[in-house]
Image 1: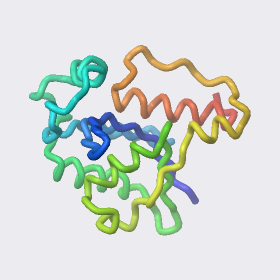
Image 2: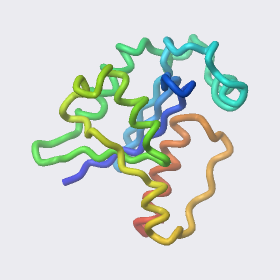
Image 3: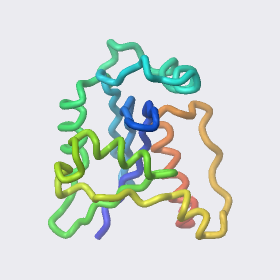
Length: 164
């Protein structure tokens, strides 16, 4: 059975590197994970990212701030913990390509990604388009907060599945 996770990443990208700023993950059972990397290079952020992402992050004293290593280890524990022997993990995001790269790069090269984590993220935006663009819930006012956006991705999934 699929165990679905809905997530969002905020990141800084310069055409060469995708540098994770934060990640929010929710599952269909109410579990949530949120973390901010303490190791992104803020100097590479474009003004839009500064204004819409970095300026909205909690202070560096907030417990959500973690080293990439700790973030990676705690994320893996969160993702793997509820999986039973017959469960298959599914990752879902809106415009998923960059999110998947930001997630996978926590482990370095693709071959270092733990086997339990899928090698791709399913795209909610593509699913929505394929479904004929049905009505979706309005986005929360706090856009570009990774956890808020992950929750919204779950709400989008529920709307497309006819659950809301």
